[in-house]
Length: 354
Image 1 (cartoon, rainbow, N blue to C red):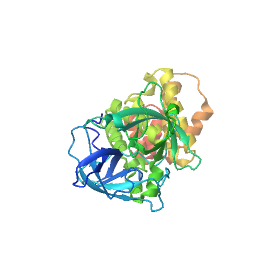
Image 2: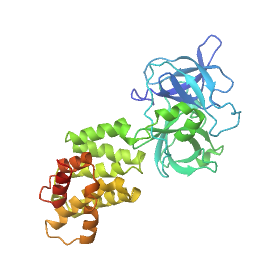
Image 3: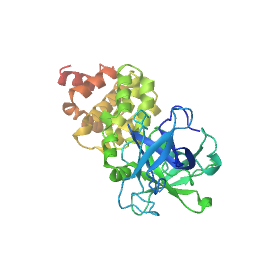
Image 4: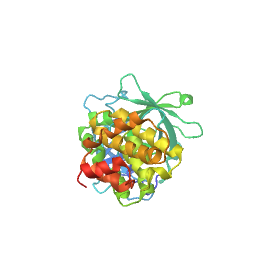
């Protein structure tokens, strides 16, 4: 069932000659004020359709349709199978993820309107699928139904958004399913392919994590001392930005919770070190110097000050990055990790003039 928090999920119906809604054609989702996307085959041969957000939000109405890719033809269930539905500008847009495709094994949520669910105004069939990987063209992604979920992607799901279960963001659109329903195999059009078909979509995707509203809110929560809320958000963001080093940096800062590393168990410290190591491996150059400085501070406060043997050469290598840490990052580290006796803490403070 569509809830009041998901008014951007739309059901698409045909219209009668007098403009009344009739049979269900498929699904769509709002991506920007006045614009919803669906599959071209959902509105094939129609210049108008009936769009509605079931679940008690607003009311449906007749909307115009247009194919996005001129080369699309019936039977082409590929990256060109995209159409635009012009909807009221007041209808809210879906939370969109970045263009990077969801990783294999990512669980996704889908909702459609098969025939057996079409009669009720506020019902749909929700199911769960798992990402397998791209098809041979690279334009589609195969998803398979997960055990334990009775529903499956079928006629009535086409054009609907698929949502990353962890982040709650749309990562693609349902395109087609295998004719043999026993296989529970389907394909989705990822956001990058949708943006090729409808270029304005590219400007709506949060490609840069620093302008992503969820990231901005997570950093604000961190700086306000709401460490648990910040950590929860950063743990979600890593699914959307697995190659962004700052996700790993901020996850560690939030996990420390404003306390010194020396107050944590060894298992927790090792988990933090592993996160920082992942970030540094992603960006081994100077852009990960702040991760090295934070790691050095953790080593000093947990191992050195407590007299626990540690790899001195590794520590010296991490400390060598101090001079390359910008003032903003230095200020973050010394504000959130109050290990004032540690040489790294003092170096960050002194070198940045803080």
